Length: 127
Image 1 (cartoon, rainbow, N blue to C red):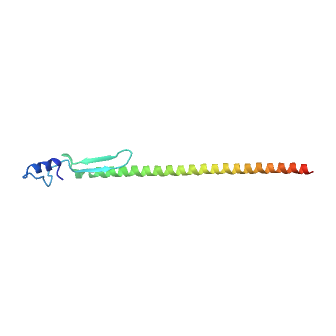
Image 2 (cartoon, rainbow, N blue to C red; image 1 turned 60 degrees about the vertical axis):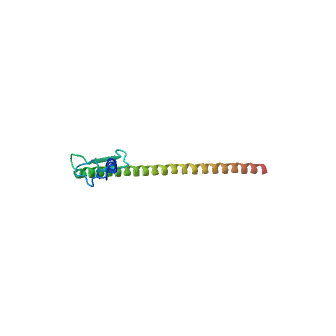
Image 3 (cartoon, rainbow, N blue to C red; image 1 turned 90 degrees about the vertical axis):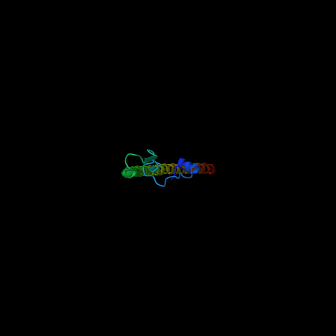
């Protein structure tokens, strides 16, 4: 793709058209890996005058695999945390259920006791 400067030059001078191909490294080609990982968000390997861009492919694949492992570990940790949260919630629900049952039984016992005392007083009154 021609740069902005090349397009401007082509507009000014009709005889100057942007080159169709780059025969030397022009810092235009690059590999870029973007992730939502906590540790890195983006890594770029650009075309330079040093090693060829094709020779950087093992680095790209290694980085991708490392991030895939990190992502898998993060997903596993989130899954374990969700399981622990669910188990803790189930234990809390059971404790609340037992407390409710004890409270209901206590209220029923108190009501039965009051009814029994009232019945005893009525028996004594009638006697």
